Image (cartoon, rainbow, N blue to C red; front, side, top):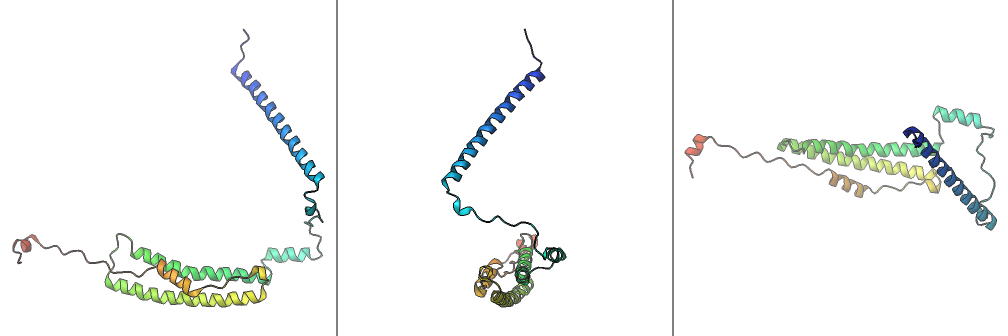
Length: 194
């Protein structure tokens, strides 16, 4: 009786699995080589041949470009596009802050007094006007950017009325919470008058 230890049997099964993997990998490599060879022979990819990409830094000004890039300088058009994105985020933050305030006021455990509701609704109208003004300024920046940027980099102008209406839907006006019913004492309920 030739009894192998469990470790020896595991090693022999592992080597068989490894041999199967190698054989499978070799078959896949051979199949891929055949496919590539057939495609090259049929000239199906002839239109892809061309001058290889120059990925080196052989440009005369590579050192200056490298230093400017590391110092944070960019092309003026790219800088303007970045400024547009920053301005858009700033304008959107106006509505986000209003949304946070609305969510805080309308949380389930909150009681909204008529004065607080009026104050919020007044502030909401002012903030939506501020949002409209910010979008108008952003539209002017987009127009100025589109005048200098190539066609493929143009930004679409914003639709002010549509965006303000969406913001107004996102942050609706607040209604005061109705006061809880007044509880009457047991004495007044005892002598209740009809």
